[in-house]
Length: 231
Image (cartoon, rainbow, N blue to C red; front, top):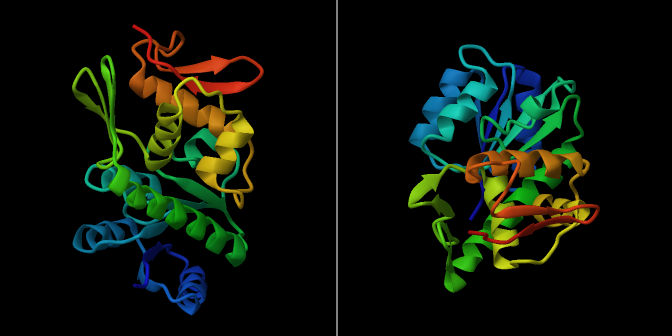
């Protein structure tokens, strides 16, 4: 079954190029040229992945992503011409999974899409061996991809969940930043380990009562990160 992709950009030449290239790979591609049109399509249809430009008419890409995260965990790759505000471009506050800066190479775009779709498939394959892990006040449900603290659901991005699930499933095992980057983002990912640090910080802000004194995701200085539930 072909993957369904939504490409959102107000530059029609970019949309045309992406659509042609992705369709050559057998993907089913829809297009939108502003934030409002994109939101309407996402609400109407089920997509496997969304390529979303930051600078859009009506709603920005960040606003679209933020609204989408209220009802869907569909993977989102942000397209942006800006490279100066990394925290924002990563879209962590808005729920994006990845970002690509313009001008981009179409082969890079395809590699990122394939890496994300492969992780999603691995996640769905886990359903046969689905686990609910409870560690005191902490609960992680692999099948529904949900996390609870004190029975309150914590809203995580797809990347945050993937990273947390890996750590939880391998409690007390320390993963280096390079390991996490390779496992969670994929070997094709050209980013640097700072991406991991930013995601860990955002994750702690969501699941820890006091992020500076974590009770779940810990740092082993000079080595990496690990999960251990402490009372």
